[in-house]
Amino acid sequence: MPKGPLSKSALVQTLADIHSEKLSRKDVKGILDSIVTVGHQELKKNGIFVVPGLVRLVVIKKPATKERKGINPFTKEPTVFKAKPARKVIKARPVKAAKDAIG
Image (cartoon, rainbow, N blue to C red):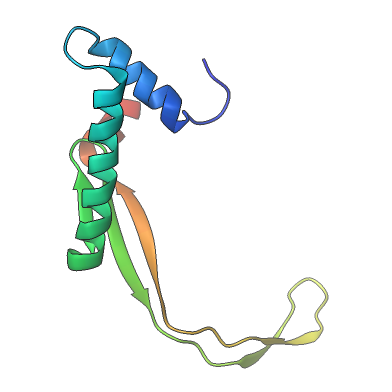
């Protein structure tokens, strides 16, 4: 088992090995790059992209927050929490098939 997550080149090589009769490493890399490109376009356009059987990526809009006063729970000293601008974040949620695969 490799230590850490699978790198892009290792993923491409693994997929090329699985489909060695039909697809070359270059073909697999092209397909993977196409999935990434389509994913970026869908997230920008619709705010959602699903990789079937694996993950659902969703864009969440976080509103701006004002500067506020608070207390540091560790030191009990008063502190000021900085304001944050409105932003968009991406959340990845596993689909049922992925949850079932590890459960």
